[in-house]
Image 1 (tube, rainbow, N blue to C red):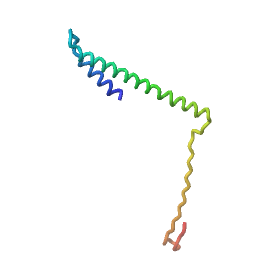
Image 2 (image 1 turned 45 degrees about the horizontal axis):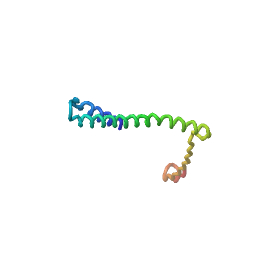
Image 3 (image 1 turned 45 degrees about the vertical axis):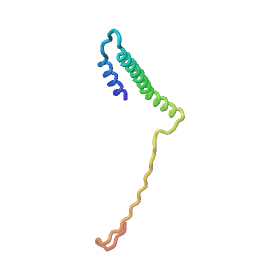
Image 4 (image 1 turned 30 degrees about the vertical axis):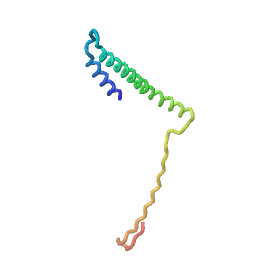
Length: 93
């Protein structure tokens, strides 16, 4: 989303006409939109910078509580087959 905002911001910046005497309403609108986009982009960047610190503090809390970091799973498998035939006749394994 930040890259989309940057693209729109660049497009608006490149298409701002020169300011002349009178009738600068379009230029003012473009500058206002550019400023709003810059504020939104800065807000998103701040939120993205917060994510690593969130996970770091979360990991510290898990260490404090002494929660287990390992997950143990056990699987038990039983197989039985009946084979007919063979050297001595019917076999069971």
